[in-house]
Image (tube, rainbow, N blue to C red; front, top):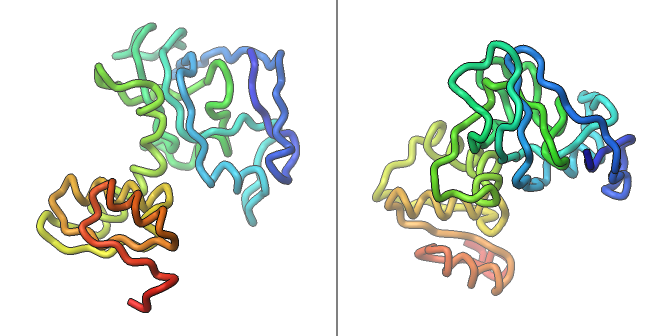
Amino acid sequence: MRAVCLHEQGGIDKLILDENYPDPKPGEGQVVIRVGATSLNYHDVFTCRGMPGIKIPMPMIIGLDVAGEIVELGTGVSNWKSGDRVLVNPLDPTDPSKGLMGEMVPGGTAEYCLVDATRLIKMPDGVSFEQAAALPVAYGTAHRMMFTNGGIQGGERILILGASGGVGSCCVLLAKMMGCEVVACGSTEDKLKALTEWGADHVINYKDEDF
């Protein structure tokens, strides 16, 4: 299969397209998915550059966020079948010590991806692979910060800093879906325009205004 791999740390120029990377074979409790889409997060840049205290096994196929179709099942896998459309949880909820997709285990920048079945999330009909692959890291982080940890309720007024970034923009959209009044901060007029289009009730240019 074709795969974009990191063989040594540095800049993104260290990523190499391997035209003949070995096809993955599922072990017990694993599936192989045909990758429909993967999205890149800034964490993938950190993986390329290297992070203190984290030793990345090489070569590594990067890409935390992966969506695709199951094409092969290993022994012991139940409740899933070939052809199922799935989103992959970057962190195994049953055993976080296994590490992140694209950092400790191969990720989504390849034609096929080997995944523990415990990471799988069934995709609803009508959701594209591209839409699904944009969800886990950015939207998961935003949801955890605001609702799991922050306990935000509908009707509250909330301030979102760095609102035009990946996680920040998700915070804006999720907060509006919850019925919050959103005050969003950005650094340029173009970003403020985008934030308004995304539903922010109030926008602040923190470069111009000492709020």
